[in-house]
Length: 331
Image (cartoon, rainbow, N blue to C red):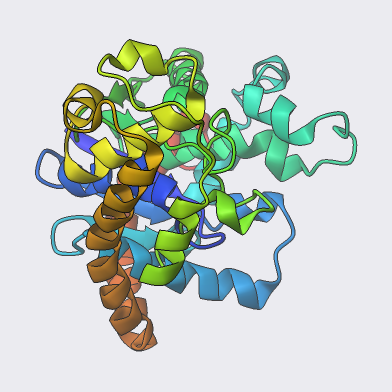
């Protein structure tokens, strides 16, 4: 089993990234061969200052390692350091179809009414994503609900390529359900919206770099309702902010919503929020301290990324060579 996943190196990692993906990645390392990449090529779909982009790659690498990604267990690298990603993307553009890409929900959401003004990179994003996966003969890809459509597209591209060129080159990947349950962490200001680094309100999210006092303050100011916590999780369905905070607490301490409510049922948020803040600080403080250490040694981070890129490139080359041969670009 080989698992491939990536994350854009833009902005600080926040609690939603950690509970929703990164800690799941950490657990995956003991279940499968894992390749994790910093998707700096994908970040070209929006303009970012070049110096900011380069620094963000190191920053994200440091954050992932601080969170538990072990370069001795997994292959960690920057996407742009392996040119095979771009090369295979262009080959796959020959079999991907405009109609498929036009139907992608992410394209519709991000382009909105300004499709004519959006970048080609944003439109073609899913084909590069397919190349990221197919390049390594990945059998499984960890995805959330909002990414399942991308895996389906990757499967379509793989099957059409194999059919068009009469080869059995690409493995149609499956969604990966290992690594335990990924929490769906919502905004601290609006329980109906995902926690996001693009939200203009700093109060909506907790960064890995926030100090203990800031973490406690953000949780204290998190939006709630006046009712006490119930015994039955079903009673939280109409209370998105309450459901979010209960889910965050459970994800941090390794408990189900039922177990959390058994302990706090009947109590108001005046009692629950301090417990939530303590749990968040206990989880994030050691990660933050490790992150500060890693940031101070750019040479060590670059060495880790270079070693990961060399390994990834060696894994990718046979597939890229086979794709060149399949389409008639080399003998």
